[in-house]
Length: 83
Length: 200
Ligand SMILES: [Zn+2]
Image 1 (tube, rainbow over the protein chains, first blue to last red):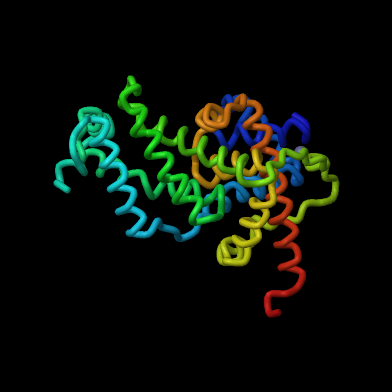
Image 2: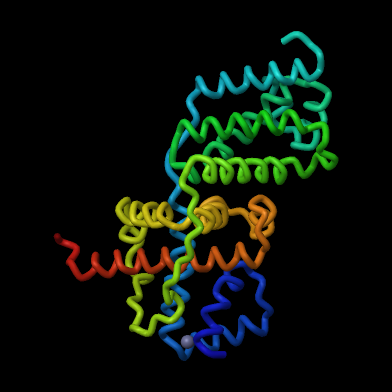
């Protein structure tokens, strides 16, 4: 395992799609290579932090009421009923 | 709305919607509107656009629901329609950019600054989230879309591939490059932060 291959496997590693064997090799390499170790840690942390980026947001109650009314109307018209 | 509907599976609700059941429809809207809205807001960064997309998604769903053969796959289908609508919006409203990022992202030889050992309150500070948000915003559109869907929203590669009509390898390579760009932006920020001294 070299550094180039190692960094290409990070994505698969996080997706849990690597074989036991490759995981073993990857870990073995990272034990001895501090550059890949740091690369891996910061790569995974970037993914973890992205997950926390979400912002407080909600459609307004008014929007939801309008949407529900609109959809119910459409449902009724699809089924030939009066709303 | 009856308490009953809340406990029903999507599959049963969808079956009822097909027969014209209004309460079932309301429950499905309640169950998914927030998620669809969030997804659209992440992609567009525009509340009005997110509402518009949410409405469009539910209208599409409703008009095609009779054609859904496996009701159990409803949510997969719904998200696909939503991702597609958000992507469509980007292509229509923004100057669509698919520029290539030609940086030697993978061949950095300089010693890496290990910011992963910083404390949590620095890592997930409002400022670092801002940096990340801005960096995601400035990614090329398809790459940004893939990063948001995968890392922010938690969809699978296959789901993204279907929704955006890209091959799985194309999704993966965009994701990887996007992550490398974000990783670098965060690294730059945390390095500046550490060297400028916390008391500043
Ligand atoms: Zn290495």
